[in-house]
Image (cartoon, rainbow, N blue to C red):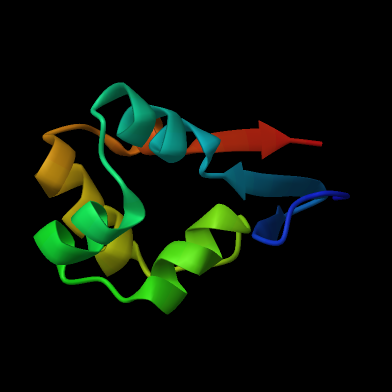
Length: 81
């Protein structure tokens, strides 16, 4: 899928993941990258992966969801081709 770096093939379907919702949530909560890093213990490199819609471990998404007290679909969008 063009424009997405994190994607999966399930059967004959290609599924991409976008983290744009996370960065909108950060803006809505007046949170900067450095704040997210400090509160979650994630590295700058991991935040950069999210910014580029790259693949990250589920543990990363879990830490972010705990910080925002939200669900996966509040920080990520699954896109079907």
